[in-house]
Length: 493
Image (cartoon, rainbow, N blue to C red; front, side, top):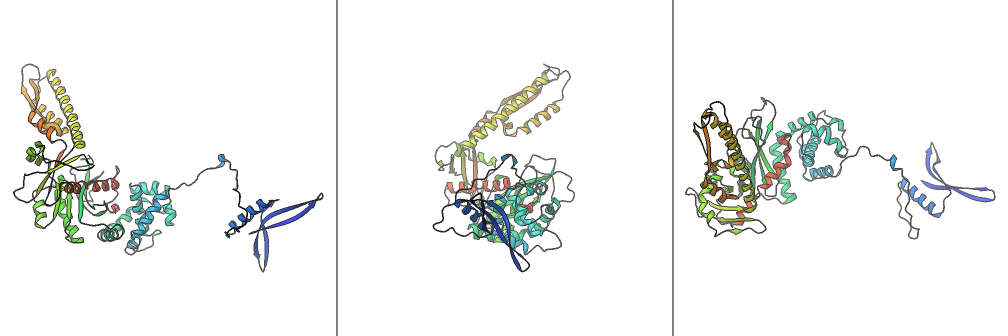
């Protein structure tokens, strides 16, 4: 494109009119076609028009050294006529796409998922699932009907949005699941190169995912301890292993009624089978302890840092009362010290820990449960005093049992007696008192816990720091689990 001008004389005056033209080939001839009439232009106007012609024609020539600078062009816009259409979120999905390629997941899935007659390859579906899990963890229905259409991911991948539905996403998960072991090995290799991740420390924890329905086709769906407070629903347990940096290394799915302690051995053996039995340290919480587990770990030469059950804290009552020997961890409101209590069947050492923040939290919880129990007992005593018919003692005992079950943390602090009485029609009298011994122990042990390890040459703060990294696993669970469901365990990675 370039500028042309024509000169006209009228009433003794000369007028120069400018127009923007472009060359168009018609057959063997080249004709000049007018793109826009620009009217009369001064020097600055001609300079702006020439710059516009260069931009429209794709020629972004550098201005001459002595060309006058272009003035900012002011364009009037009617704001009431401006509207936004098809707004899309771009930044997070673009980053997810880049991370997908950096981890070479495109090469991994394209080499293992065969291309059939489907409009969208299965490796593209796998990428959509993974990026959605990274940006907005949710169900496949939400991804297909809402999330994908609010992002620019379909444009980035060059696919049609209407080709993605929940059934295709579920089938994509089915395609990915058989690649679980190979995918975990691939991610391990990539993380070593990208993030220089070491596998000398592995953190393990378990969560659950429940289903609403009969789930007759899934033998692992069973009723068990529900972390989601849904004992009425069947569930599966999911064990997740992460590195100290928080990167998931592997996962296993277990029946919903399997105790956490029964999952540890399977996970440890699977990790060792895939990555070798290196001199690494395992960390898990008190809920996974069992009488057989720690001896088995020691027999295999495995090292561990674990939390001892709450019941073992009483063995260290003397050390808790002794004000000497405590060390404060820097920048943490936590005190720690080794105890002299030893396990006769092992060479393990025990680390006492106490936190002021944790003490305040547990004290508040005990106080709340105490108030609930006292209120319930007073209400039950009034009902017995004003009853118009005799009441069976077994019925009252069941009510007390249910009340204590709902307030287990403070149940031991009360001595409750239900005795026969002739003072009222019910024939029963309810009395209670506070157990001073249990109250003293509760006050002493609030905010305290015990760590156990077979590493004997570490400082106290090192053992505590290793254990506290279990929060990395909890953070991973919070990312991958929401109030709807875990759409599929294959989508975790």
